[in-house]
Length: 300
Figure 1 (spheres, rainbow, N blue to C red):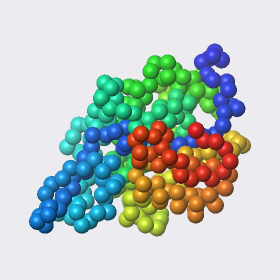
Figure 2 (figure 1 turned 135 degrees about the horizontal axis):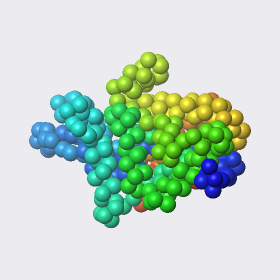
Figure 3 (figure 1 turned 120 degrees about the vertical axis):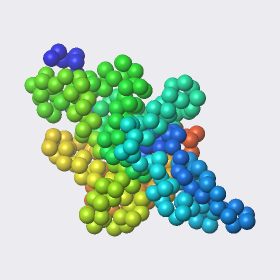
Figure 4 (figure 1 turned 90 degrees about the vertical axis):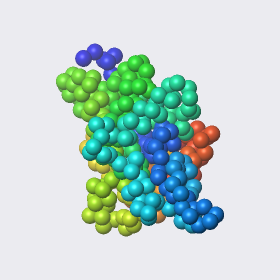
């Protein structure tokens, strides 16, 4: 395979990895949470809530509650249904992308960082409070690649991915793979965690991770799982360079929980890693507000 089919500079590239929340961070999904709102007379009425608004009112139990106290009913749109031909996640991702391409919506704060992550072939994790299966989230990423990346950007992604293969697996491994296989292999290396998925919750409980009933704690578990997975790969390829990991989320509660987790757990467990947390709750600030820095490398 000719040398110009891959990026030969990959061997000198820094090791940057990313963890992304999805809703209102990568795409503005038209998915609603079904709540009930308390009126002045004390009665309760149905009330649809966006993910952005839910992050603000979710602990206001005096005025908002799930239908009949059942959170599964509240998040019915955030689950995969066996009765549907297509995941609700994919249908809403398509709508969100349609709106972006039509100029009817602004790009969320981490949209361009995620786009760059894909172009550069960086390893990443999707960590969302949704309850979909991992394959649904992966198919959403595939849709993003197919519809958001330009042909030139997709070529750039493949060239970078082939550069990693040549660097860490050799010319023979690269020559044996088609472009489609290269992309499939890359997507298989990433992590897709929907922390309210029943299988994910069962895994958290089986690991006896503290706070398994709290979504913020389950996001912490997902981040730790990604880092453990990441370091196994780094050790396998023998990459001996500084590592940085960025996390972005639009929910201030999740941001605070992850920042605390970094300070008290991750920084000690992974002392050589630079961690950066971005609060993307302000839609007018691209990349979000930097809240936590641990380490010395610039991240973005």
